Length: 322
Ligand SMILES: Cc1cc2nc3c(=O)[nH]c(=O)nc-3n(C[C@H](O)[C@H](O)[C@H](O)COP(=O)(O)OP(=O)(O)OC[C@H]3O[C@@H](n4cnc5c(N)ncnc54)[C@H](O)[C@@H]3O)c2cc1C
Ligand code: SF4
Image (cartoon, rainbow, N blue to C red; front, top):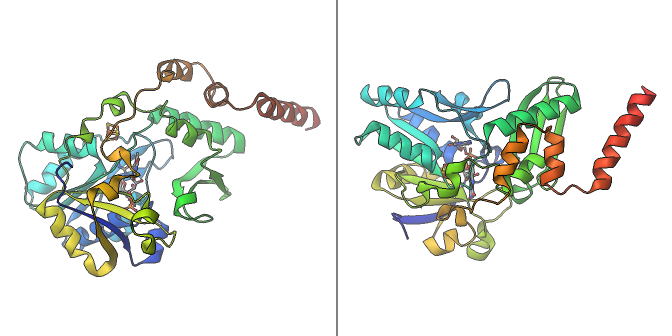
């Protein structure tokens, strides 16, 4: 067990907050606590054009809405570390959230400890290429003939925490929910063929510089079935005294149960292990630059030929009829 002091299964008592969060809404509660101290929160939101994800500095609860939920692509950091340093030097309390590599990167950039800095990382499977996401959005926009204005990777509108779907909204406010079992982007993500090169030798698996780590508590039914009402349970790993201090500060807002590290991570190897690089990853990226998103899906996701052909025939039929 790495630097972990205590481990919990936990979720927010506020149902609305949980429904809008990927797991048990721990991020939102920790962030709201920091804001209540007059602090600032850094986290990742989708860009306004939906073609990417980027860091945002948030100073009120309204701003947190955009940071809520996992965005399954590598986020742009830009000058964020400089802004964090400025806030810290100005005496602001700061919560910095993100994947383990971003937290470690920030700590290395700062080169000193700040009492007013709290870092929360998320257990991380890996992040897909932002270029692939952009191509996916363009492909969807071609299909719908309209611009995408919203994307949620872990939507719980129609299914529970375990059955989450991708939700997309276009400029005409049409909403669509796509099962993660059929969504080509999500399938490329879980196949690991589109992850960043650093994810296959992720140093954050063994060097964790955050105060607190949060994740989905996959396998909760084996450990604390009484906590699973299907709305989402977080795994919380306390790594430092500061991590314990901010977790203790939200006690009135949560349900929780202390568990062992072994039970906590038994269904979540992303906490301690990087995935091996798939053998098709290199050719996938070469092909990405010359193939359409649909061709790429057909080649790498084993979409049955009849299905691909069916789509083509439907397309030709529509072109002839219209
Ligand atoms: C790319 C990625 C891979 C993940 N892989 C796993 C996994 O394998 N196993 C697991 O148990 N949990 C994984 N998680 C974590 C999980 O999905 C939830 O983010 C976590 O449980 C926190 O949920 P929440 O309900 O507390 O808050 P939420 O509101 O759902 O969490 C939002 C937080 O995620 C951060 N965030 C969102 N997107 C990004 C991004 N692209 N880059 C950096 N930070 C981001 C925000 O800054 C914010 O702090 C992953 C998250 C991401 C972003
Ligand atoms: S797997 Fe590691 S390197 Fe890749 S995004 Fe996650 S924390 Fe960063």
